[in-house]
Image 1 (spheres, rainbow, N blue to C red):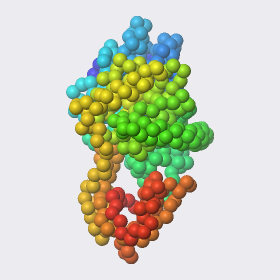
Image 2: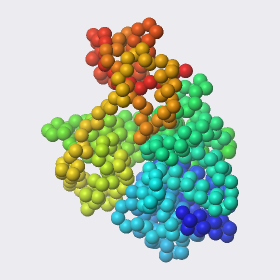
Image 3: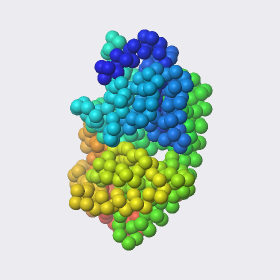
Image 4: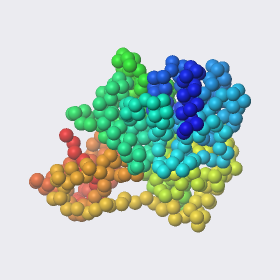
Length: 488
């Protein structure tokens, strides 16, 4: 860190061209916006670059390298990427260009010979679970302190830190919990015109409620993410940086339309993947589903992989085939760790990376079948077998329905913010009275229930569970697992 802030300080004093090199997901988009915005307070020679997901892929690309050389950049700062770009950084170094890597992904194999590497997973930093935007924020904190600036000014960026942290599904524990807690406060009173417009257009219910992790995850983040999945992620960066109301209106509308297209494409791929998953498990249930097709859009396979994982209770890798190369996205909610399993298949992969719960791979199409067999074989070994058990719902406590009241709700609120790693408590109810139920939603895929009697009657929603409605046909009392919330 010390070496990094010293080099940045020199670059700012000399008005060198500094490039923030980001990534196309929301973590990368918010990291880029944060670092670009903060550095722009000290210099007008700050630029940013985000690679195209389809043409360039993840990390520093050949096209990105040419851009760096062509425009005489003298210092590159990567955000949410770079730890696996050792060949590209070696190339850049020949042109006397310095690179500072800020990343949070697991190092694999050779460590890049950068001027400085800031990554909690490659040093003795006490908290290892920062998102990419969290690492970028720590760099800005250190830089402000080094330059003798008021570090409290950096707290204005916590809205971006919260967005990226929630979007990247890192555990809401330790520093992340602090980032999300105070970042949500900043988001609810954001001074960024782009964020205010995004909130205005994407909130399902306003009613004066404060934004929650859940609402960000389901309503706002997918719209930002759509730009990197099937559009141009620079649109999202421009939105987070703009001070123009008219431009923010235009950009948000563009992003909403992109997200609608993404939803339609997702449904088509989801239906095809379901059929493949059923067929793959028909003889013997797979340890991990490896599904591939030429017609799948590489920008949405991660979303579909998450849905298939939830529905089939299995880890999933979905691969989009394009000519002779396949690009895959993996999702896992069990105990096994992608970053430990994929190295066992490294000879079959062109490129791979990720962490315990999500991964990305690049593979030759003619090796997909070999990869499917190998990774299932690896997960069948003694070392990994116990880690592949089907996920279950862990009930924190069984309670009677009369205990669910305002005081109880306020006590639960004290445990917020909830998110990955700090899950909202799950309660169990036995023999709760079922007053009524009905199917709801555009496609009637959800169940709305009224549970309890008289003063203890509550509304409940069971998302994507309409297919279970036959269980309720003649039921008077039901056993349920539930979380509590308030609809104002």
